[in-house]
Image (tube, rainbow, N blue to C red; front, side):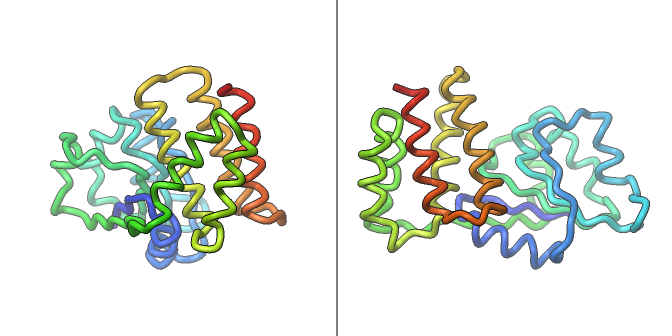
Length: 203
């Protein structure tokens, strides 16, 4: 069974994914998969369990491979696709729509929403000022959700220009994502550290 989870509310999406897959599952960065890898991912067995539980991250960004998804809808495994952004105009999306469950999780609009985006733009020029803005919204924001918004803005930047700064930002956000899940440090402290570093390669 394959399900797709998409949207910028990463906290809600993660809860839904864990409800679907359970607490233990494989995680695969699908952006680097080759066409030759797909049969093993969707049909191959593991040494320990015939039915695998797999989370594929950002599979739709791998456009060539994602187009083959309709060929694997009968996968015997339990597979969740988490897509930060899903192009509903693509041929692959149109081919799978109505055939598999697609759940979308969107952050609600609030009075601080505009300020969240201002923080990212400000951090490119002045990390300390960005942290001052962050203090105004911390009480009403979840750090994981906020990091998800930073990631979505960085992806938008990269879509416009695939330059060194844009690639560096995505790489650093990937590290931040790992740290937020594993580090014993405060989540907000980790985010503040990222905002300070961001200005060093953008300004």
